[in-house]
Picture: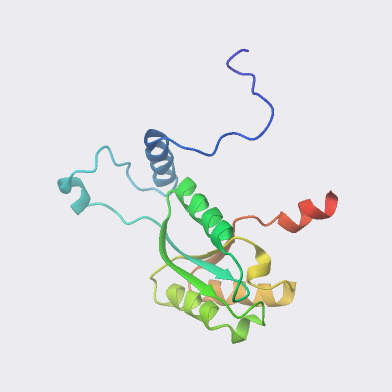
Length: 160
């Protein structure tokens, strides 16, 4: 098989330390930050902080959120972002304005402790477009944004 040919199927998700450093350097370069040639104490003093996000998860009291949490962690690692906090709402998918965890996540944006609220699926914010858009407006007015890991989850299932 030539170097340009690819085998069918998904690529492996395991990354080496060197690959993670390379991806972080690419993300830093895209953000206009200098790359980090080494991690010594002298370099760490002048280092710019990485982009920080709040992971927001919502589910029923007995729901297993391990998979969605891992998806968010993998996503942040692939972009070289840092997780500032993980907030879980365990009261089910009620309206966004009554969920205390979502209010806490948005407070991280207002207080500039994070630049985005990251969630695995749009439906964890709200399955209703109007409610989701309202939360997105609130995030943007606080100086941040909502980021969805798998926005096409529902669309892919509807085609199958």
